[in-house]
Image (cartoon, rainbow over all chains, first blue to last red; front, side, top):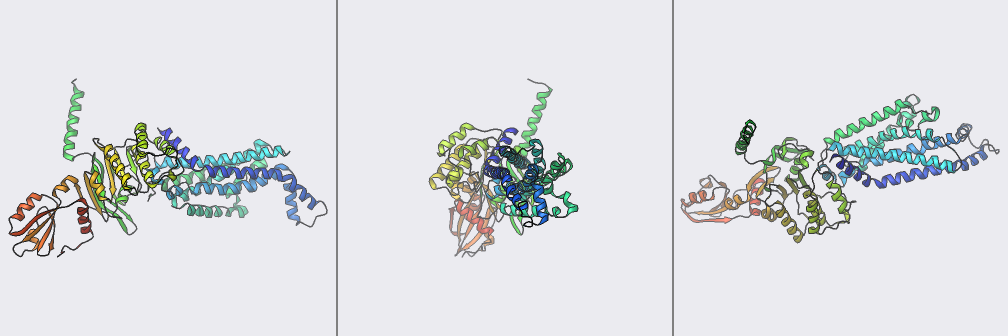
Length: 263
Length: 323
């Protein structure tokens, strides 16, 4: 019975969010392909600017960064994938997935249906959180794998194992953002308000990134997986801290959800 | 078979029988001093409600009386500000909810699912489910299995919600304004099916409504709530027998106080006479009044609607003097 109910809840969550999952995965996969295909094109343009008598067109500091980024395909792919597109898009996706967990059901009046079935609130929210976190993991993994494959097809090899290892930090960070949005979804009856509140928290969470001495506190920095890029090994302490933060937020959401009035 | 164990069981059985006799019939729903406030508004105010097992219990009240808030507290959707709630012998939890069928006022269901998917989903949440009965309801209500719930009419959504509530063969069925939005034909079909389902079983039906003739048609017990307070609980039979108006025109000048007594809830002046609202012991009241000198002594039957208005009007603080 327990597993049948759990399976039913998982099925419902997947059914309910399938378009968010599909669109999220499709956009990220398309981005991965574009990132892979643009390398040669952009490198040629930049080389023209930097080498073909174009010195002085770009400020020296910027020229240096661009040269470093295009010095190897691995550095280019990492900085454009983990350093920009993936964590930025996944942050938005985590908010979109989390903000509707409870608030959307409240808005569509299905929450009273669900919570009057013989399933505890703890289980209901645990399944919702589990499915959301799993969906993020799959979307991050599939889109990153797309980049590895697209790179291979466009004539550039990436160390697949090492590159995929970067997803660990991206996923752990995205679950923190997701559980923040889930918590807001429990607190607010309206999913737009929940999403806006989660976005505000997400912006506040980016503040440590701007202060060099506090960067280790930044979720987004850990999502960029610099440790894997530099040393081939994730920062396991940061990974554990992100998971602990996500678990703490999830427990807080469950605690509030168990006491929440459904009007 | 005899022996210490069977003797022991006999003693326990006798104890239980004595306890049942002492405590009255088992209750499907029991609230004690149940209160719920929303800010300054007290939606439910010290409600003591007892719904006996096997009864068809109608919860009546005007809009905003506190019916839905009460039901939501029974199901654990809202936490009481004060007081206690018991359903099927204890606090609400998933095990007890497995024996409860509920149709909410807004018929909240997953609009993106088809009727078939909605049934399949709900079925897997319950430890027991009567597939045959659900199939029969679908046929009876002519519910299209492959249509999305969002595309059903309001009436069909109500019928689907009822089908889902009956699927687990619940001991307690709670319906919040079940026929709201149904056309007369569908309403009749809905109520007939409900009566048929509940007849001859020990299952309890608790339903709220403000459509009084349908309550009168199916309920055996009625409670009236007004402004969050319970103003009356009576069996429909008792109400039909004893809840009357008595018109009395005396031969001499009398004060209303002289007519008050056991069974008389209210005495109102009407022209040169009085109208008494009798709630109990009609025969005794008539015997007492007949001994007073009078020109007119007549009994006026009240239907549930009139009884309802009497109690609600009283709750609104109506003046006693109509004359």
